[in-house]
Amino acid sequence: MIPKLDLYQKKHELMSADEIRPGLEAMEEALTKLGHPERGPRFIHVSGTNGKGSTVAFMESIARAHGLRTGSFTSPAMIDLHDQIRLDGRPITEKEADSAFAEMKKAGISGLLTDFELLTAAAFIIFNNHRPDLVFLEAGMGGRFDSTNVVEPEASVITSIGLDHTGFLGDTIKEIAWHKAGILKPGKPGIIGPLQPEALYEVTRAANEAGAPVFIYGSDFTAIPGIRPGLSGPHQEVNLALAAEALKAAGVPIEPEKLKTGAESAFLPGRFEEIRPNVFLDGAHNPAASEALVHTVKDRFGQEAKVRFMVGMLERKDYRSVIRILEPVAHSFIFLDFDHQDAAPAQLLAACTDIPSKQIKAAQIPQGRWAHEDLPLVVTGSLYLLSELRPHFL
Image (tube, rainbow, N blue to C red; front, top):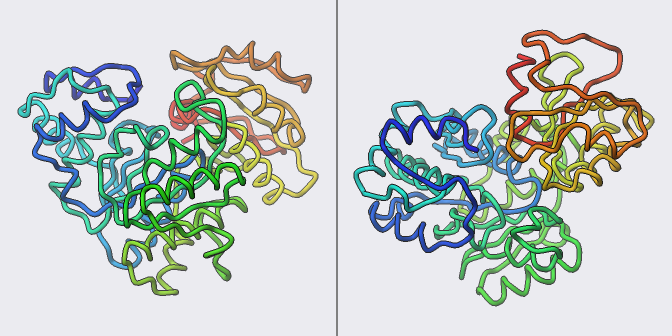
């Protein structure tokens, strides 16, 4: 489900499959027909279970503080596909999207790709046409067989590894680490976040096999002192360090003052974003992200703090663990039914906790207003939920 993709498909008579097909063969065939737009720009490629979007946001902001022109491709959308592809920090325009889709129609790739592959191809075309100095490319799922893994990057980043997308990536940390490590390329630096031993072993094994030098958080580099990251939560110090190290590995001459300016002005919608007074949006859609959210709540409001949670999740996610992790800082829950084909019913979520809760439909939230209460409200779970709800709080 990529908002507004269908509009461009109808306009340009392009077909794609609304499903996930891991593998690079179709993507490589399409890019050959397109004249290989992925070979023009300079990329930093990012995979990981959590922290990808935040790391890209830091890299984007720091690079721009150094005067570089940037491109970014991230997922999912916060509003629609335009904000998934950014140039110099701004979402692409309708005209820029039209140009890319027209090029794909002319190349004859209709029906060849999945929805996400089609959007990835559009991103490559836009970046190739505009030629930013550096492009930050986020893997959609996994890494090794993700449609983004067709580039030869300046550096690769693996932010974290946890259990997520188990239906596609495997049921063990080792299997998932193998997928994430697939973005490491011969001779290209790999910047590795703090991983549990089993994941680190698999990543370093894959790096040795690929001939990729690796630089690991905690041993080769660590948090940067004297900077308060623009994104909230203690875990953002790690993401900032990964971003700075990746930029260095890509040849950006980091200047301390510009690093500080970029890091402190970084912004990413839906990452503990205060959308209204005392109302926060945070896409904690798996156990590791939920643990980070709990640390952020305690860091922001105090170790004994309690907040109200509004939660909606996809049924394929580990929603039971997420709710259990949130419970120690939860005063109450509001569970939501929202507009996604895989959304878990609110009733199913409510059955996972004994903490006071109620169930409502996301569409019932009054647009443009919200009842203010003394306790903070944290809206969390699926990023698709945040995309649907964000306009209600603006």
